[in-house]
Structure formats: structure tokens, C-alpha cells
Image (cartoon, rainbow, N blue to C red; front, side):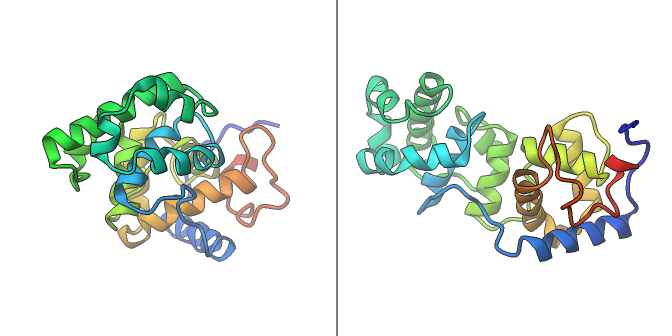
Length: 215
């Protein structure tokens, strides 16, 4: 079967898809456990190329030992590495979050900035992390495109784009702004639960009548 999609869904169909996903995942939210914007940005920075479950397994001890930017800024990298060793790229990530803490302390008086440009200038913070922080931490309307959002949105036909930036821009055009943040969580949950990378459960998918993957 040829599974290459040739078009995208109409805006009305996109709306139907988001509605069905909302009904299926009414409790969808950020899965990273955090108590502050500071803990959120560190957790998201650590989540690259690893699971939220793995991150949640190391952050309680991490934040117990270094509860603030000031505390983590003075930490020894070797000690931080030991605490987060269970997650992928722990050496690079330990260095990044220490530099992240130092930069927040030096340039932002120890407070996570509520500004996209300032966020992406921080060590280990890319576009996805910045959007998650602004959406989850500060309540701004944002769509953060991770591997799940990229795969699911392009597979279903919400958009048809070659990279994460163009996917983000397309989704912002095709989804009402009031639903951006929620849609981000719906798509992530759907990607984890149903629309898997290798073997999507198309028969059990609530949006299979619209999905262009099967067309």
C-alpha cells in the first residue's frame, strides 16, 4: 500500500481532528513533574532524546540537592552527572543545566525569563523547550513541536512540512490560537498511546476517518 500522503486536511477537518483528540485525552497535560518554572525548564532541557518517565525518575533528587539556579550554578558537574546518570546524554546535559543555571543567575537575576529570544539564548534551550516553558510555565499560547507532534501532525494531515519549524508555523495557521497549547498535549498523548512511530494502531484510532496516512 502506498502510504505517502498527497495533500492535507481542510481547516474544518483539522478542527474535527482536534475535537476528537480533545474528547479522547481530556486530561492531557505536561507529563514532566515540576513545582516551578525553574524546575520545568530544567526538566524539559533534560528530556531531549529520553522519556519523561526517565526524567521524572531523576529530578526529585536533582532538585532536592540543588533546588534553585543559585544552588545548581555552583554544583560540580561530576556530582550532577551521578544524579542524572540514568537518562541519555547525561554528561552533556549535566554541563548544560549547570550553565543554564549560571546564565539565569547572571543575566536574569535568578528568574526564568518570560521571553522567547532570551530563552533560546540559554544553554541547552532550543525552540521546543522555550515554547514548552512559555506555554506550560507562563500560560502563553504556544505549539511546541517535539518528535510526537511532528510525526502525528504530518502523518494525519494537519500539515505537510519537512521540518519542525515549518510544522510549528503551519499548525499555528491551521489551529485556532486558543487551542494551540492544548493541541500540543493532545498530539503528544496520541503519539504515545496510539500513533506510534513504527506500528500505529490505526484500527483503534479515533481520527482514522480523517487520517491521510491510510489514504
